[in-house]
Image 1 (spheres, rainbow, N blue to C red):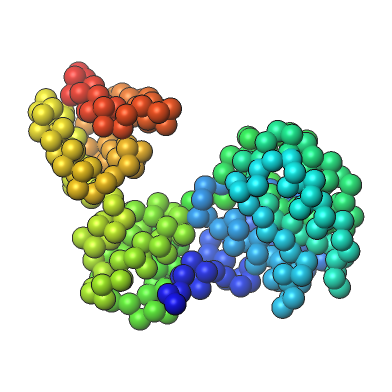
Image 2 (image 1 turned 30 degrees about the horizontal axis):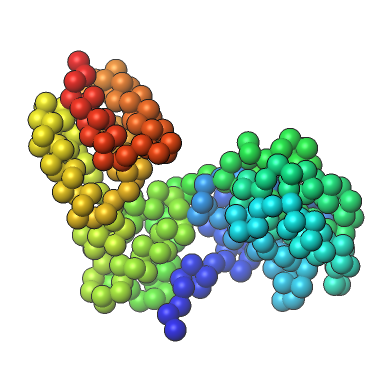
Length: 314
């Protein structure tokens, strides 16, 4: 059976959590005092929200931590019934050799409005015996009465050096053969997401050969910086058909998602030798076309339109 590295290298204690030093120190102080408030962990995926919640429970409860800890994913069960039944049933039972239980509700911003109202009442009623940790990507989607009851922790994407530190840890633990170009490529592809870092690294090692830049971009289905730069330079030189052909070839061969291409273009714009004013105009258009794709526009047509707009700029 193939091990899943995201689970194998998940920290067991708060001391092992990479990055988020100030947040980890606050969580450790809760453990030391033996008291935990309702909390909300907000931020992008792969930044350590679930890891921090589980590490907190392990530090607080010890080896039998899972007796007093419940994890549920709101994207699977997002209606009012899961709050009234599953969550409420766990909250009302007495904690085992502890003052309170912890319910970790992942992706809580996917809960319906009615479910959030039911959750608010459950948080009020069982606050003496149960604490809630809500994890979400967008805290603005959580109703104000819940937000006001929680200590809010905002998780940012990890810095490149922190991702590098994690990669080196996995490389050492698995005795991997990886060169410096492979490490730099993983850092670029992952964008501060440790879950993506782990998955890309594991996928890139499947052939047993040295992990290098080429292999990383292949398994990640991602564009290399020089490829994006060539497309942009063709568009800026009014060679629209060349830019379109290069883009189409890459998207067909790699099966790239439109949003991934837009993000790659956004990253590379800042490296172009252009006046800041022109970069600002390009960034404005990138935002517009990303919105169009998210709203259901055809990625191919929208990205080609973006390249046409870039070429037509003064």
